[in-house]
Image (tube, rainbow, N blue to C red; front, side, top):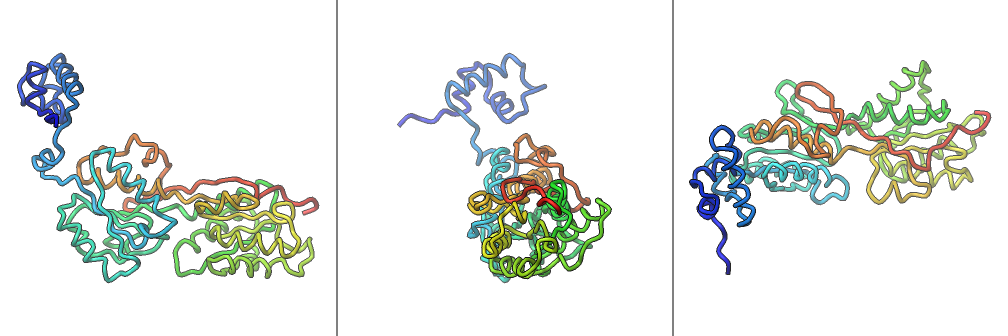
Length: 362
Protein backbone atom coordinates (compact mmCIF):
# COMPACT_ATOMS: atom_id res chain seq x y z
CA UNK A 1 0.00 0.00 0.00
CA UNK A 2 1.35 3.40 -0.97
CA UNK A 3 2.36 5.52 2.03
CA UNK A 4 0.31 8.67 2.54
CA UNK A 5 2.33 11.84 1.97
CA UNK A 6 3.27 13.92 5.01
CA UNK A 7 4.01 17.59 5.54
CA UNK A 8 7.72 16.68 5.63
CA UNK A 9 7.43 15.14 2.15
CA UNK A 10 5.86 18.38 0.89
CA UNK A 11 8.61 20.43 2.53
CA UNK A 12 11.35 18.35 0.88
CA UNK A 13 9.74 18.57 -2.57
CA UNK A 14 9.21 22.33 -2.27
CA UNK A 15 12.61 22.99 -0.73
CA UNK A 16 11.24 24.70 2.35
CA UNK A 17 10.92 24.01 6.07
CA UNK A 18 8.13 21.90 7.52
CA UNK A 19 6.87 24.91 9.51
CA UNK A 20 6.51 26.88 6.27
CA UNK A 21 4.31 24.10 4.87
CA UNK A 22 2.14 24.21 7.98
CA UNK A 23 1.75 27.99 7.80
CA UNK A 24 0.78 28.03 4.12
CA UNK A 25 -1.63 25.09 4.14
CA UNK A 26 -3.35 26.33 7.29
CA UNK A 27 -3.98 29.75 5.72
CA UNK A 28 -1.32 31.71 7.62
CA UNK A 29 1.30 32.03 4.90
CA UNK A 30 0.82 35.69 4.00
CA UNK A 31 3.39 37.80 5.80
CA UNK A 32 5.23 34.71 7.05
CA UNK A 33 6.29 32.88 3.88
CA UNK A 34 7.50 34.38 0.59
CA UNK A 35 4.93 34.28 -2.20
CA UNK A 36 7.23 32.22 -4.44
CA UNK A 37 7.68 29.66 -1.66
CA UNK A 38 3.93 29.59 -1.04
CA UNK A 39 3.36 28.71 -4.68
CA UNK A 40 5.95 25.91 -4.57
CA UNK A 41 4.35 24.49 -1.40
CA UNK A 42 0.88 24.41 -2.97
CA UNK A 43 2.20 22.79 -6.13
CA UNK A 44 4.10 20.19 -4.10
CA UNK A 45 1.03 19.44 -1.97
CA UNK A 46 -1.08 19.00 -5.11
CA UNK A 47 1.53 16.74 -6.70
CA UNK A 48 1.65 14.53 -3.59
CA UNK A 49 -2.13 14.69 -3.03
CA UNK A 50 -1.46 15.97 0.48
CA UNK A 51 -3.94 17.73 2.79
CA UNK A 52 -3.46 18.72 6.45
CA UNK A 53 -4.54 16.22 9.10
CA UNK A 54 -7.91 17.54 10.27
CA UNK A 55 -7.75 15.82 13.64
CA UNK A 56 -4.31 17.18 14.43
CA UNK A 57 -5.39 20.63 13.30
CA UNK A 58 -8.47 20.46 15.52
CA UNK A 59 -6.34 19.53 18.53
CA UNK A 60 -4.01 22.46 17.92
CA UNK A 61 -6.95 24.84 17.56
CA UNK A 62 -8.77 23.29 20.54
CA UNK A 63 -11.76 22.63 18.29
CA UNK A 64 -13.42 19.35 17.40
CA UNK A 65 -14.72 20.74 14.09
CA UNK A 66 -18.02 19.05 14.94
CA UNK A 67 -21.43 20.75 15.15
CA UNK A 68 -24.19 18.92 17.00
CA UNK A 69 -27.76 19.11 15.70
CA UNK A 70 -30.78 18.07 17.74
CA UNK A 71 -34.06 17.66 15.88
CA UNK A 72 -37.54 16.89 17.17
CA UNK A 73 -38.52 14.86 14.13
CA UNK A 74 -36.66 16.29 11.14
CA UNK A 75 -34.50 13.22 10.56
CA UNK A 76 -37.50 10.89 10.44
CA UNK A 77 -39.86 13.39 8.80
CA UNK A 78 -40.43 13.43 5.02
CA UNK A 79 -40.89 17.19 5.09
CA UNK A 80 -38.13 19.23 6.72
CA UNK A 81 -34.90 17.28 6.18
CA UNK A 82 -33.77 20.08 3.86
CA UNK A 83 -33.11 22.27 6.92
CA UNK A 84 -30.38 19.86 8.02
CA UNK A 85 -29.16 19.47 4.44
CA UNK A 86 -28.68 23.25 4.15
CA UNK A 87 -26.91 23.40 7.50
CA UNK A 88 -24.64 20.47 6.67
CA UNK A 89 -23.64 21.97 3.30
CA UNK A 90 -22.38 25.15 5.00
CA UNK A 91 -20.64 23.17 7.75
CA UNK A 92 -18.78 21.04 5.19
CA UNK A 93 -17.81 24.14 3.23
CA UNK A 94 -15.97 25.36 6.32
CA UNK A 95 -14.37 22.04 7.26
CA UNK A 96 -16.90 20.94 9.89
CA UNK A 97 -18.95 17.77 10.18
CA UNK A 98 -22.42 17.52 11.70
CA UNK A 99 -23.74 14.91 14.11
CA UNK A 100 -27.52 14.68 14.35
CA UNK A 101 -29.73 13.29 17.11
CA UNK A 102 -33.50 12.97 16.65
CA UNK A 103 -35.75 12.93 19.73
CA UNK A 104 -38.83 11.77 17.76
CA UNK A 105 -41.00 14.46 19.38
CA UNK A 106 -40.16 13.28 22.91
CA UNK A 107 -39.31 16.50 24.77
CA UNK A 108 -38.07 14.52 27.76
CA UNK A 109 -35.12 13.43 25.61
CA UNK A 110 -34.02 16.97 24.68
CA UNK A 111 -31.55 17.55 27.50
CA UNK A 112 -30.01 14.07 27.28
CA UNK A 113 -29.57 14.45 23.52
CA UNK A 114 -27.76 17.74 24.03
CA UNK A 115 -25.62 16.18 26.78
CA UNK A 116 -24.64 13.30 24.49
CA UNK A 117 -23.47 15.76 21.85
CA UNK A 118 -21.60 17.86 24.43
CA UNK A 119 -19.81 14.70 25.54
CA UNK A 120 -18.51 14.48 21.96
CA UNK A 121 -16.90 17.91 22.43
CA UNK A 122 -19.00 19.65 19.78
CA UNK A 123 -18.04 23.25 19.01
CA UNK A 124 -21.64 24.39 18.68
CA UNK A 125 -25.25 23.23 18.75
CA UNK A 126 -28.33 23.73 16.60
CA UNK A 127 -31.89 22.72 17.40
CA UNK A 128 -34.19 22.09 14.40
CA UNK A 129 -37.94 21.45 14.46
CA UNK A 130 -40.59 20.22 12.03
CA UNK A 131 -42.95 23.16 11.78
CA UNK A 132 -42.48 26.57 13.36
CA UNK A 133 -43.00 26.44 17.12
CA UNK A 134 -41.78 27.86 20.43
CA UNK A 135 -39.17 25.67 22.08
CA UNK A 136 -38.37 25.18 25.73
CA UNK A 137 -34.63 25.28 25.13
CA UNK A 138 -32.59 22.71 27.09
CA UNK A 139 -30.50 24.61 29.64
CA UNK A 140 -27.29 22.77 28.74
CA UNK A 141 -27.29 24.29 25.25
CA UNK A 142 -25.90 27.42 26.91
CA UNK A 143 -22.54 25.69 27.43
CA UNK A 144 -21.50 26.19 23.79
CA UNK A 145 -22.51 28.61 21.01
CA UNK A 146 -26.03 27.57 19.98
CA UNK A 147 -28.80 28.55 17.57
CA UNK A 148 -32.36 27.54 16.73
CA UNK A 149 -33.78 26.81 13.26
CA UNK A 150 -37.51 26.81 12.47
CA UNK A 151 -38.27 27.37 16.15
CA UNK A 152 -37.78 30.14 18.72
CA UNK A 153 -37.03 30.25 22.44
CA UNK A 154 -40.16 30.35 24.57
CA UNK A 155 -38.34 32.74 26.93
CA UNK A 156 -38.28 36.02 24.95
CA UNK A 157 -36.25 37.80 27.62
CA UNK A 158 -33.37 35.29 27.46
CA UNK A 159 -33.78 33.58 24.14
CA UNK A 160 -31.24 31.96 21.90
CA UNK A 161 -30.86 33.42 18.38
CA UNK A 162 -33.32 31.87 15.96
CA UNK A 163 -33.69 31.57 12.19
CA UNK A 164 -37.34 31.22 11.14
CA UNK A 165 -39.47 31.66 8.00
CA UNK A 166 -41.10 35.05 7.45
CA UNK A 167 -44.64 33.70 7.65
CA UNK A 168 -46.34 37.11 7.72
CA UNK A 169 -44.62 38.14 4.52
CA UNK A 170 -45.48 34.77 2.98
CA UNK A 171 -49.18 35.14 3.76
CA UNK A 172 -49.16 38.65 2.35
CA UNK A 173 -47.41 37.67 -0.88
CA UNK A 174 -49.79 34.75 -1.41
CA UNK A 175 -52.77 37.11 -1.22
CA UNK A 176 -51.03 39.72 -3.36
CA UNK A 177 -50.43 37.09 -6.05
CA UNK A 178 -54.13 36.33 -6.53
CA UNK A 179 -54.98 40.03 -6.20
CA UNK A 180 -52.62 40.68 -9.11
CA UNK A 181 -54.81 38.30 -11.14
CA UNK A 182 -57.89 40.43 -10.40
CA UNK A 183 -59.31 38.49 -7.43
CA UNK A 184 -60.97 40.46 -4.67
CA UNK A 185 -63.28 37.90 -3.01
CA UNK A 186 -60.52 35.77 -1.48
CA UNK A 187 -61.06 33.19 1.24
CA UNK A 188 -58.40 31.88 3.60
CA UNK A 189 -58.51 28.33 5.01
CA UNK A 190 -56.14 28.32 7.96
CA UNK A 191 -54.77 25.62 10.20
CA UNK A 192 -55.39 25.63 13.93
CA UNK A 193 -53.96 28.26 16.27
CA UNK A 194 -51.81 25.72 18.16
CA UNK A 195 -48.86 26.51 15.88
CA UNK A 196 -47.59 30.08 15.35
CA UNK A 197 -47.53 29.61 11.57
CA UNK A 198 -51.31 29.86 11.04
CA UNK A 199 -51.96 33.21 12.78
CA UNK A 200 -48.88 34.71 11.14
CA UNK A 201 -50.05 33.66 7.68
CA UNK A 202 -53.50 35.10 8.45
CA UNK A 203 -51.81 38.32 9.56
CA UNK A 204 -50.07 38.50 6.19
CA UNK A 205 -53.39 37.91 4.39
CA UNK A 206 -54.91 40.81 6.33
CA UNK A 207 -51.89 42.99 5.54
CA UNK A 208 -52.40 42.42 1.80
CA UNK A 209 -56.00 43.64 2.05
CA UNK A 210 -54.92 46.63 4.11
CA UNK A 211 -52.23 47.48 1.56
CA UNK A 212 -54.81 47.31 -1.23
CA UNK A 213 -57.19 49.56 0.71
CA UNK A 214 -59.85 46.85 1.02
CA UNK A 215 -61.68 45.51 4.09
CA UNK A 216 -61.35 41.86 5.11
CA UNK A 217 -64.54 39.80 5.02
CA UNK A 218 -64.22 37.91 8.31
CA UNK A 219 -66.59 35.20 7.06
CA UNK A 220 -63.93 34.30 4.51
CA UNK A 221 -61.30 33.46 7.15
CA UNK A 222 -61.89 29.96 8.52
CA UNK A 223 -59.62 27.90 10.77
CA UNK A 224 -60.20 24.29 9.80
CA UNK A 225 -57.01 22.30 10.55
CA UNK A 226 -54.13 21.07 8.43
CA UNK A 227 -55.17 17.91 6.58
CA UNK A 228 -56.80 17.08 3.25
CA UNK A 229 -60.20 16.29 4.75
CA UNK A 230 -60.21 19.64 6.58
CA UNK A 231 -59.56 21.43 3.29
CA UNK A 232 -62.34 19.46 1.60
CA UNK A 233 -64.96 20.24 4.24
CA UNK A 234 -63.85 23.86 4.54
CA UNK A 235 -64.19 24.36 0.79
CA UNK A 236 -67.59 22.65 0.72
CA UNK A 237 -68.74 25.13 3.38
CA UNK A 238 -67.59 28.01 1.19
CA UNK A 239 -68.81 26.70 -2.17
CA UNK A 240 -71.64 24.16 -1.89
CA UNK A 241 -75.04 25.55 -2.83
CA UNK A 242 -73.64 29.05 -3.31
CA UNK A 243 -74.51 31.06 -6.40
CA UNK A 244 -71.47 31.85 -8.63
CA UNK A 245 -71.74 35.56 -7.87
CA UNK A 246 -71.60 34.91 -4.12
CA UNK A 247 -68.74 32.39 -3.87
CA UNK A 248 -65.07 33.32 -3.42
CA UNK A 249 -63.07 33.40 -6.64
CA UNK A 250 -59.85 32.36 -4.91
CA UNK A 251 -59.10 30.23 -1.86
CA UNK A 252 -55.77 30.54 -0.06
CA UNK A 253 -54.72 27.62 2.10
CA UNK A 254 -52.36 27.47 5.08
CA UNK A 255 -50.63 24.40 3.62
CA UNK A 256 -50.61 22.26 0.48
CA UNK A 257 -52.65 19.43 2.02
CA UNK A 258 -55.55 21.81 2.65
CA UNK A 259 -55.24 22.94 -0.96
CA UNK A 260 -55.57 19.34 -2.15
CA UNK A 261 -58.82 19.08 -0.21
CA UNK A 262 -60.08 22.30 -1.77
CA UNK A 263 -59.33 21.05 -5.29
CA UNK A 264 -61.15 17.78 -4.53
CA UNK A 265 -64.17 19.74 -3.27
CA UNK A 266 -64.18 21.82 -6.45
CA UNK A 267 -64.19 18.65 -8.54
CA UNK A 268 -67.03 17.22 -6.43
CA UNK A 269 -69.08 20.35 -7.17
CA UNK A 270 -68.23 20.41 -10.88
CA UNK A 271 -66.04 23.50 -10.60
CA UNK A 272 -62.84 23.93 -12.57
CA UNK A 273 -59.53 25.02 -11.06
CA UNK A 274 -58.47 27.73 -11.80
CA UNK A 275 -61.19 28.74 -14.30
CA UNK A 276 -63.93 28.93 -11.64
CA UNK A 277 -61.86 29.04 -8.44
CA UNK A 278 -58.15 29.72 -8.02
CA UNK A 279 -56.46 27.66 -5.30
CA UNK A 280 -53.21 28.58 -3.56
CA UNK A 281 -51.23 26.34 -1.20
CA UNK A 282 -48.36 26.94 1.20
CA UNK A 283 -45.15 24.94 1.87
CA UNK A 284 -44.38 23.62 -1.67
CA UNK A 285 -44.47 20.14 -0.20
CA UNK A 286 -42.13 17.71 -1.97
CA UNK A 287 -43.82 15.27 -4.37
CA UNK A 288 -47.20 16.89 -3.78
CA UNK A 289 -47.45 20.51 -4.93
CA UNK A 290 -45.71 20.09 -8.28
CA UNK A 291 -47.34 16.70 -8.97
CA UNK A 292 -50.90 17.93 -8.33
CA UNK A 293 -53.37 18.20 -11.21
CA UNK A 294 -53.44 21.08 -11.75
CA UNK A 295 -49.94 21.77 -10.41
CA UNK A 296 -50.28 23.82 -7.25
CA UNK A 297 -49.32 27.47 -6.91
CA UNK A 298 -47.85 27.83 -3.44
CA UNK A 299 -45.45 29.61 -1.11
CA UNK A 300 -42.26 27.56 -0.73
CA UNK A 301 -40.91 27.36 2.80
CA UNK A 302 -37.20 28.31 2.79
CA UNK A 303 -36.09 25.11 4.53
CA UNK A 304 -32.61 24.73 3.05
CA UNK A 305 -32.01 28.48 3.26
CA UNK A 306 -32.92 28.50 6.97
CA UNK A 307 -30.50 25.68 7.70
CA UNK A 308 -27.73 27.39 5.77
CA UNK A 309 -28.33 30.76 7.41
CA UNK A 310 -28.44 29.23 10.88
CA UNK A 311 -25.20 27.30 10.34
CA UNK A 312 -23.38 30.32 8.90
CA UNK A 313 -24.41 32.38 11.92
CA UNK A 314 -23.40 29.62 14.33
CA UNK A 315 -19.97 29.13 12.74
CA UNK A 316 -19.37 32.87 12.89
CA UNK A 317 -20.00 32.69 16.65
CA UNK A 318 -17.78 29.62 16.95
CA UNK A 319 -15.11 31.74 15.27
CA UNK A 320 -14.47 29.49 12.29
CA UNK A 321 -16.36 31.20 9.51
CA UNK A 322 -16.77 34.73 8.17
CA UNK A 323 -20.05 36.56 8.42
CA UNK A 324 -22.10 35.19 5.54
CA UNK A 325 -21.05 32.50 3.11
CA UNK A 326 -20.33 32.13 -0.56
CA UNK A 327 -22.65 29.14 -0.86
CA UNK A 328 -25.82 29.77 -2.87
CA UNK A 329 -27.91 28.43 0.00
CA UNK A 330 -26.38 30.81 2.52
CA UNK A 331 -27.88 33.92 4.08
CA UNK A 332 -26.41 36.08 1.31
CA UNK A 333 -28.86 34.34 -1.05
CA UNK A 334 -31.93 35.42 0.91
CA UNK A 335 -33.02 38.88 1.99
CA UNK A 336 -33.21 38.04 5.67
CA UNK A 337 -34.74 40.39 8.22
CA UNK A 338 -35.76 40.41 11.85
CA UNK A 339 -34.65 41.50 15.31
CA UNK A 340 -31.17 41.16 16.78
CA UNK A 341 -32.01 37.70 18.11
CA UNK A 342 -34.32 36.55 15.33
CA UNK A 343 -33.59 36.17 11.63
CA UNK A 344 -36.54 35.78 9.29
CA UNK A 345 -35.96 34.18 5.89
CA UNK A 346 -38.52 34.97 3.16
CA UNK A 347 -40.69 32.29 1.61
CA UNK A 348 -40.68 32.04 -2.18
CA UNK A 349 -43.74 32.45 -4.40
CA UNK A 350 -44.09 29.50 -6.79
CA UNK A 351 -46.67 30.13 -9.53
CA UNK A 352 -48.04 27.03 -11.25
CA UNK A 353 -51.39 26.11 -12.80
CA UNK A 354 -53.90 26.27 -9.92
CA UNK A 355 -54.19 30.08 -9.95
CA UNK A 356 -55.49 32.11 -12.85
CA UNK A 357 -57.40 35.28 -13.75
CA UNK A 358 -60.60 36.16 -11.93
CA UNK A 359 -63.67 34.72 -13.72
CA UNK A 360 -65.41 37.09 -16.12
CA UNK A 361 -67.96 39.30 -14.43
CA UNK A 362 -66.38 39.02 -10.96
